[in-house]
Length: 337
Image (tube, rainbow, N blue to C red; front, side):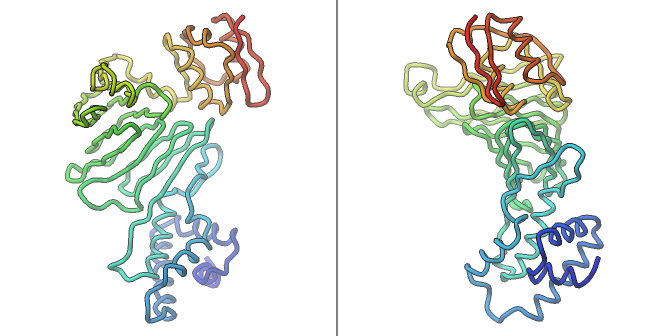
C-alpha cells in the first residue's frame, strides 16, 4: 500500500474510491491494521492540538467518511463486502484518537437487509449472524459490561461465540429478550407477525417475555430442537378481560430444521393462513400485495418454494385457492374468483 495514500486517508483528503481501497487493505491482515494504527497515531501525536476536539470537530470528522454512517450495504451474491463490524472498529480507532482515552465512547453498528435481500454480519466477539430479508440488527463495536447487548428485529440464524461469563442479550420488539451463552438458534420476530419464535439447535437459551398487564417477567428455557412461540398481546387486549399474559407454547418438533429453510433458500408453508403467506412473500420477493377482499384471508396454503418467481408462485396459488391476481412491477393485486 502506498504510504502517501494512507496519509491522504488519515488527513481526510482521499477520494471515496481511495478510502474504500484503504479500508479493504486494512481488513486484509492484522499486520496491515497494526501498521495503519501506528501511522495514524504518529501523525495524530505530531499534529494534535493541546485541547480535546470540540463536538463540532468530532461531527465534521465523522461526516467526511461515508462508511462511518449506518451500514446498509450488505452484499450477498458474487461480491466481497467489508464486514460491517470490522469497518466500525477501524473507524472507531481513528475517531478515538481525537478524544481523551477516558472519554472514548463505544460506537454502534446498524445493519439491515431490504426485502428480497439476505446477508451475514460478524459481531465483534466472533459470533456470526445470518440475516433474512427485511431484518435489522444493532450492536456496539466492542462488547463491555455484564452482557453482550444486541438489538434485533426480523429473522436471523445466530451462531454465538461461547462466553458463559458474559452472555449475549438480544432485545426484540414486544419486550421479548433472548439470553445466550454460546449456541446456535433461529429467531423470528418481525414487528408485523403474530408470534415471536425462537428455535434452539445446540447449547441453551433463555427467552424472557413480559406480562402485558403487570410487567412480570417469565423465563422459558429451551432444549435443543425445541421452539418457543410467544403470541403478541396488544395493550387493548391486555386491558380487556383476556388473560394478562401472552400465550406461550413449546413445540417439540422432529422437523425443527424447517425453521431454517429460508437460510437454505427454501420457503415452506404448512397449512399457513394466507395473511402469513402474503407477509413472507412480500419479504422474500420484495413486492407489495393489495388484497381486495378479507374473505381471501380464510384460505390456507401448504407448499414449498425455492427458485420460483413471484409470477410462478402466484400461478400456483391461483390453482390452490379461489383467487385471481394481477402483477404490475412490484405490486400484486389479489381478488376473489
